[in-house]
Length: 551
Image 1 (cartoon, helix red, strand yellow):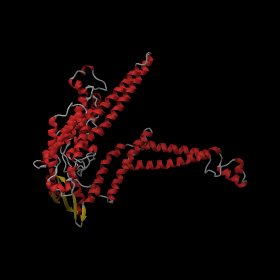
Image 2 (spheres, one colour; image 1 turned 180 degrees about the vertical axis):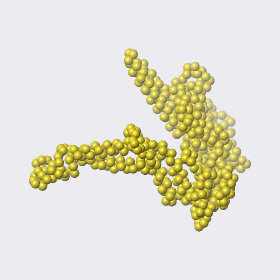
Image 3 (tube, one colour; image 1 turned 120 degrees about the horizontal axis):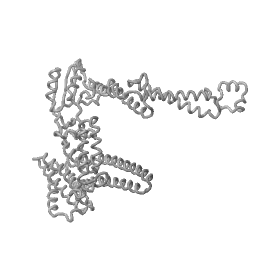
Image 4 (cartoon, helix red, strand yellow; image 1 turned 45 degrees about the horizontal axis):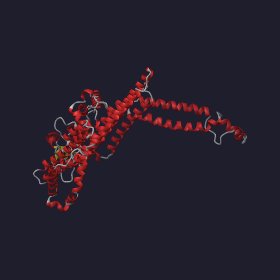
């Protein structure tokens, strides 16, 4: 469910601003619009974070260019790393200048500019006789080369010193810097008017009692009210137990439903797991994902450990159902009922499965809407849309030849469903403002047909993944069989392994991309359009210390 939000107005004494901010941060239950703060202290804290992030980037980049050497005094702070980088930048400019000078004067040889200047003072023809440049250099060529060598050596030392810095020390301080920025932003939001300071924010209904207890302790004055018209509270979702990890998936995707929209976390996770399995389409790949997840279990957050375990396990199950392992089939599983059904050479069964998944997904959205709107008359229109989707499902299967004929009952059901949508989508009192929606009904019905057909991508992308794997397998086998001598077999065996590794790694990368594109789209576009979820909300982010901040 989406947790109800209460608007908070807090009043405290101006003299206790910092203590008030500390208490709010300790409470960790109030959402503040920190982005609205732009004071000098906020800017300074933001600059400190940017410098720390830049220092870490410099360390990692330098470590990729040079070996990590040990120095008696290693950089330990952001300032030291940035100072080394500034020195290195100055030296790079000098190095480039010297390289241009060397290139200009190296054809004239290693002459002494001061001696040449004295000779030209005696006889102006010396320049043309000896072959001196129009403009004499500031030093002789050998000195330029020596200086260039020293500058390049110093650049290397700066690089090595930056690479030797311990970025973990800076990263450990980053939460502290982020907390400092948040503190200054909140402090600025707590506007002081004479002896009184006022602050506004949002607090979940479930945290109201904790806020009231803190209010009594601190001597604040608070006003709690429901959101007013035009206000957009943050979205805090509390999915059922076992589905809470999906919040981290939403955070990773950077999406959040609007405050007044439904919590679709349960169907999102269930169908996303199914889409993940079908798009990857290979049990061996699922095993690799699962093995990598378990190896990283100590480093992964608990939510992502659960999500990746579920997605990988679903892919392994699909591998058993379809008998697909690295693009090949296990001989003993070819006669399994699910394998025989999915292996239909006409692909009708796979397309039927995809269309069935699609109509169940979209009908769920419409039936859910209808149940939520009861007893309002518009609930009938939502149930009507569920009937329209079912009719479009029958149409789709008839078009591609899965169903030999369109069933008669589908016509009666479709007609009744369209009538329900037309009669109950818009109330009589809304005809002036929303009457145009009825004129768009034919286009909306055709759009529903397109939405169901869109789910065939699960079959198409999964099949493409299998075919890519099969082709790389066959390419490797054909190459290995092309040699006869033992040494040729050895070399070709190594080449075969290289082809298999390259092919399946490439296929895994393409599978990951297809998940981001197709699995996310089917949930956030097709399903969400029918459910009425626009993903226009912003996540509830309470003002509190970072979990990794040192105490």
